[in-house]
Image (cartoon, rainbow, N blue to C red; front, side, top):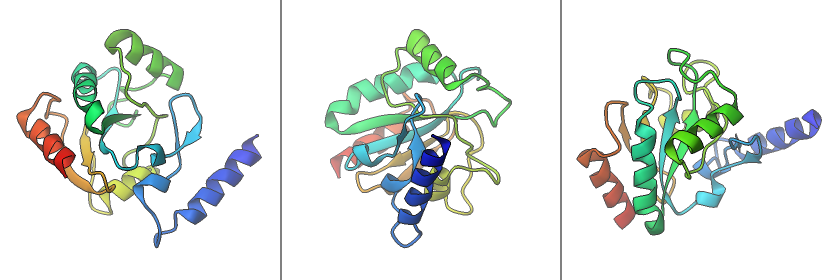
Length: 176
């Protein structure tokens, strides 16, 4: 089984060479451990958020879910990427994270397996989104991606999901 997974990831990495790499062909694992990508969400506006269950910003899950519900019929999705790199605030397993989000915040937006968003082990998704010089400073950083897979805005942890600045940026991206 591990050999098949390795073979799939290796093949995906070859197809995602720098010359033809897009946001949508980067290999990911969903919160249940299934190999996937963002390809099913191509053509949608995405808010990619590194999340954590034991953070002072964890309550933002409620606002993220509200945004997801408010705009999903217009082609918008929140995508949650758990990360344990900031203060060890996401120590649980993927199952723990999934259960926590569902039970405490009724999360229905797509959740993915834990990733690294900084350092030498930074996931290739974040390499793509941030480039060489971009960085994530803390949990609940938000990256807004347009319908063509291009980053159009980035917001820090202090920007709440109800922020007018964030909402206006989402609405502009949805209009394009």
